Length: 377
Ligand code: ZN
Ligand code: ZN
Image 1: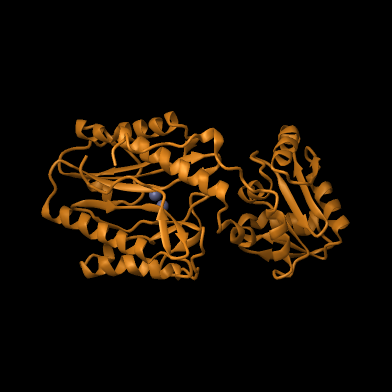
Image 2 (image 1 turned 90 degrees about the horizontal axis):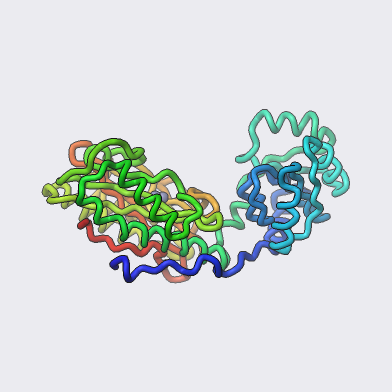
């Protein structure tokens, strides 16, 4: 596809996010986790459940409803954003009195067992909660309660992820010809980032990776002063952020003529990536997607040069559940969004990684990153 064929949707009229029912679904999951209430401390999870985008908040979800605590910087914003999302909550703007507000809310809810998000609470915070905030209730570590809800994307989330992917597609198509002019990795990365901004990204999804020549053999190389030259494979891994949602795509571009080994690396990774995408469907074990990619690369003799897992979920976080790797226990669900990104990394030849973000469907998947996979500049 050329730049002209790719299109960014109108970012001001994306389908609305269906935030309000989420806390109810979480509440239904509390009994199975054997807790009476959950203290949500992950800001991303707070955002998911309430629509709040500020940098400080706690959310208590109990049978009695929602109690939302933030500080004076965010009082008005919290009121506005929760109202806009249709979320009903008691909002406490506390300054530094969060402890009293939350302790009172837990007491009012009559919770005997209070869940904490084990992945989002430091050891120090846990000790503070246990000794000072909630000395009279039993604190219970929980994992993945909100993450399980976030696995399945609603229409508004899907629209934002697709829009972020579209921004990235258009941006790459626009700046890609510059690779022939011999920019440094840094220069090319900055142009790509700027193009994403110009097409409506709120930010980059993560620090753009531009890894050329020998640097390509390091999967997460940071762009540096190396000048891109003929004979380079250039691994470009990047994404756009749209209204909190991420995109993630990798393309490897061949500058000038490739060696026979580089050609073969590209062909093998392309085939592995297609095999992985073909394996994705509702009800499939995530590790079987990894296995499908790995089988092709193993067969080519480069199994030990595939240095990472096959993919990950994408949404409000750039890396979220489900993980798609050899050790994954996840089963893919419809409307989950995952990446498929095998790679081969050989220090003497460079690296090849090809990554798409796909939406899982009942009988397969639908790619939302649409950039073509021809290696030519
Ligand atoms: Zn990526
Ligand atoms: Zn990725």
